[in-house]
Amino acid sequence: MTYREANLGDAAQIAALHAKSWRYAYRGILKDDFLDGDVFQNRTALWEQRLAVPDAHQFVLAAVENQRVEGFVCVYGSEDVRWGFLIDNLHVAKAM
Image 1 (tube, helix red, strand yellow):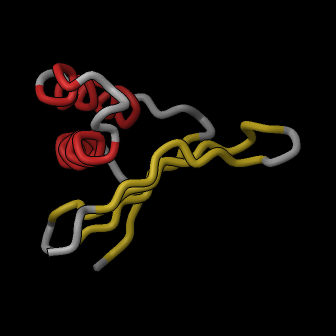
Image 2 (image 1 turned 120 degrees about the vertical axis):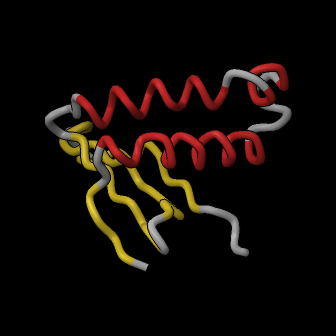
Image 3 (image 1 turned 180 degrees about the vertical axis):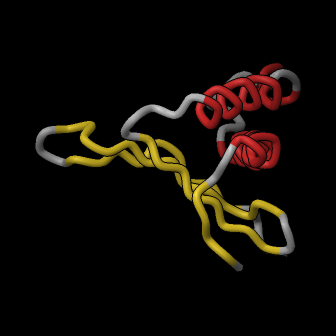
């Protein structure tokens, strides 16, 4: 497995992993209609925007194996005077 900064070319794979993670972890918290329907499109729009025009303090790291994004983390620096960084997203593919 290699780790590298994510780029716009990773948006679809990151969105798919994000949507899959939400479908598993947020069942019963978010509406089933959303999780079973528009969650992938929602996450795709988010990641295309975030990776195309990244915030100045945003850093997205991808864990890649066999050209597949198997995990990612999105961190924002300087978000809080006391704590500093904010881990906005951390998702990892379920083990095979």
